[in-house]
Image 1 (cartoon, each protein chain N blue to C red):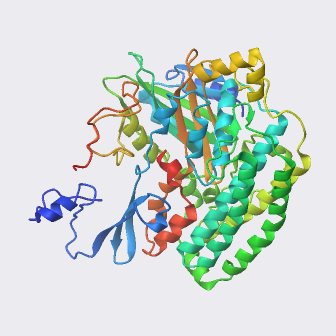
Image 2: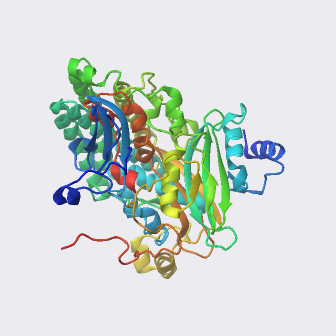
Image 3: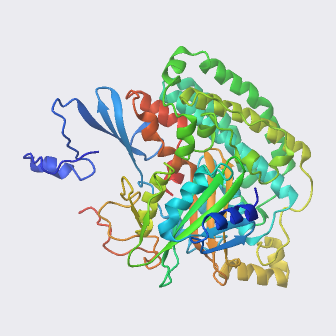
Length: 161
Length: 419
C-alpha cells in the first residue's frame, strides 16, 4: 500500500470532503473538514483494505492565523499494510470545537484530554474532558502561541508563607 | 469518581483545609461498602509521581483514574523556543532510564525533517546504544517488578548488571545518566576499542546473569501467583487503547517497529520478535526477558559488522562541525557560529518519526516553518503516557494488592508520561 493508492481511495470515497493533501519526506498528510472527521476516521479504521486500526498519536497545533487558528492532527498506522497516514483538520478561533473520536479508538480519550488542556480545543462528546497536566482551575492553555514561555505571573497560585 | 454536591455535611475547619477538590469525593452508596483510595504521587510502587485514584469495593478494584502532571515541565513549549541542537539534552530527561534511545529517536526525527542521514558507522553505534538502553530499561523492570511483588534479591542482581552498563556509558559518553550522546547527523564521539571490549564482556556474561534471575523467578510460586492472570489486556483492547512495546506484544500482537517499519539498520540483523499470548503481568515479564536475549543477539551482530568511517554527515548547514576544526579553520567557525546562534533552518513541512523505545513507540511529530530556527510544533508521543491510560482497563476487577504488580508490569516512567 503506497501513498498514491491511499489518496485515490480517499478521494473517490470522500470527493466532497476532500480539502487538500501534501506529501513530504514520503509521508502523506490529508486535510479534511472538521465536521467530517468522525466519518473519515471510522472509514479508515473499518475499511478492510486500508485497516488503519492503530491511532499512534493525536495532537493539536496552533497555526496562529485568523481563518484556521487551531488544528487537530491524527497520526494513524495500519499494522496490516505497514503504512502511516496523517489526517488533519482545522477549527476556527471563536468556536474551537471538533467531534470526538473516542468511539473509534479508545486511546483518543487521553490524547484529546491533553489537547484540550494544552490548546483549549473542545472535543464534543468526549466522556471525560478534564485537564491532563495543568491544575483544574488554571485559566489558560499553555501551548497556544499567545501564552508566553515564562508563564503568566499569578496564574499559578503559590502556597502562602 | 462521582461527586455529589448536594450532600453537604458539616466539616471541621481543619478537615476542610486538608481537602481540595481532587481529594474529596463523596458518592451515593447506602451500604458504604465502596471507598476511594488515593495512591501516590508519593508511593514507592508508582515508579515516580504517578497518582492513582482507586475505587474499591472491599478489596476489589471497581474503578481507577490515573492523575498525571506532577512532573509536567512543558517540554513541548520549551522545544518551540529552542533550536534543534539545544533540545538534545532535554530528551535525556524524558525516559531517564534509557536516555540513549531517546537521543537516537530525536536525532532520527530531525534528520528525517532535514532529509539527511547519518553515516553508516554512526548508525551502527546508534543501534548498539539503543539496544544497550533497552537492556538497561528491561533490567530495571525486572528488578522493580520482582521487588514490587516481594522478591528483593532480583533487584540487587539486576542493579549489579545495570551498574556495568553505566560504566560502559561513562566510558562511551562521559556521563552515566544524562547522556546527550547523539548529534543531528551523527554522534558526539566515536566508540573506542576499550568501550567495544567492555560491551563484548558485558553481553557475553549477561545471558548467564539473566538465567540466574530466571532461576529465582520462573519457578517461584509466590512470583507466579502474584503475576499470573493479573491485569489481563486482550489483543483487541491493547490495539484499541494504543499500547505499544512489550505490553502490546505480550497481548499477542506481533508489532515491533524494528521489524514492521525498520529504521536505522535493523533490517540487516537476524533477530526474532518475541510474542506472548497471555496479556497478563507474567506474560509481560516473559516478554521483556525474551527481548533482552534478542538485544544481546543484535549487539553481537552489530559489533561484528561495524564498519570504519566517519561518524558525522558532511552537511555544513545542518551538522555541527568538530571543535578542533572550529578553532583552526574559518569556514567551520562561520558554520558553528550560524548553527549555534540561529539554528538549523529546515524547509516547510511536517514529519512523524518514531522508534521502538524500550517501553514502546517513542514518536516525535515536528512541524517546521522555513526561516525559523525553532520547530513550530513539537509533539512527543511517549509510550508511558499511553500505557498508563490502559491502567483503568487492566485494573478493573483486580485486587488491591495486584495494583503494584500491574503498574510494575507496564513499567511506566513519569519523566516521559508527563513531558
